[in-house]
Length: 527
Ligand code: TEU
Ligand code: CA
Image 1: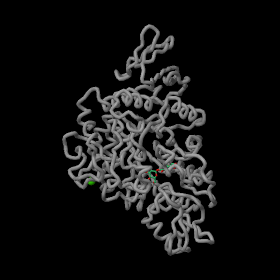
Image 2 (image 1 turned 90 degrees about the horizontal axis):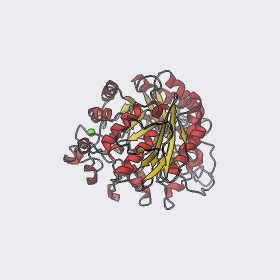
Image 3 (image 1 turned 30 degrees about the vertical axis):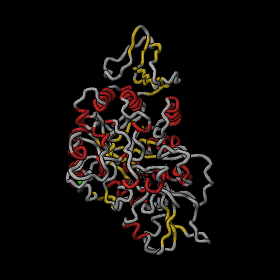
Image 4 (image 1 turned 120 degrees about the horizontal axis):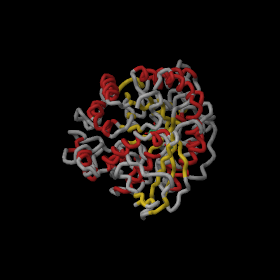
């Protein structure tokens, strides 16, 4: 998959390096481990990898708190390891995209250390500082995603600073042009090292809004996790602060930088009350981001008309933009558990086919190809601060971050010789890579076959999409490309469904055996 627009319709395998493969026996995955497993990744028939943060960090948010944007944390290896990784991935035809956490830094970043030192140092305005209200309370009622006020009092400046996430993740001030220039130079550093693109963390948070109180929330926000009414996480009031129109100017600068390096791409992470609108706005026009993904398919809801409603709405809004979809990531309950398909081979295949036939690029989270379930951890096993804060209403993100099981009979599933930072759940061992490798009917081999099938079929990679109404829980749509028309029919119900086959059409010979509908005497039968 070469060419400057390789990213259109690409499947991007998300690696959470801490949990992929440990090579030096400290219980934590590392870049050398990713290199060791590149043949496995290439065997999946994906086009690219996305590496979650491996940068220098105090690890309060497991790397999403960066203290040196240009450094590799010693826990993960060295810059040399990174260069070797890029070279080895490219040698296998895999593009390399990396996370960039630009909206906020770690409180240990030298920029923040300088900024907090006084009110008049050169970086005094690099973060979002504000005076207390007359009664000493924070400047606004905004709340942080990870709980509590979004403002933290600083005793030296006698001011508050804004943090949308943890206290240790102060928000950079993108309204200051110097910050924009500095951040773009950090991004350029990785472009110069030969990366093929970026996943941009919380990209709609970069530019903060006017400092005024939020109205109280009247409805539950969908987002981040499957929000339940008893879950305080869903009632955070920070949300209005996001997605300021001025943020588009930053995205345009970022795109201009990427355009200096042809063939690179960008995927913005967008969490917002109107995330589809923001996805569309951020990826339209060819001068902002290449694509965005949202949390819309990441809730617990998975009725076919609900899912199709999201996809069809995106189509109606995106114009010349390009979407990216995911059914899992390192922030969300694992797909098999979230959509009640644990151990249910037929449903897991259905969800795979659903994801891989939509119009757009795809992010596939490590372990999704194995059908891994959410690990259920006890409170004292948790390390994610969000889970520790909100337990038990919200159990945090550790359950989707346990190590990749490589070998059923090896200690710690073959992930590490030492006790890993999170345990490998016993029930994951039966799903280990070596078990599924050896079984032609495994989910892993189904992913390989379907990804190979998708890659070879232009209507699936690049074609337009036309949805038919969902009927009896069967989702149907056409992918059209250069005169070819492909009908996809997905039966979400528990019963067999029959529907009339389209006239003047025939079943696709290349469809892998797992596409198990039958086509006879003018009828389609979907198990
Ligand atoms: O997550 C971003 C995030 O938390 C929001 O987009 C949120 O989902 C949304 O506002 C809900 O309404 C990213 C990373 O993926 C996560 O691991 C980090 O902890 C977080 O940013 C902070 O860097
Ligand atoms: Ca290690």
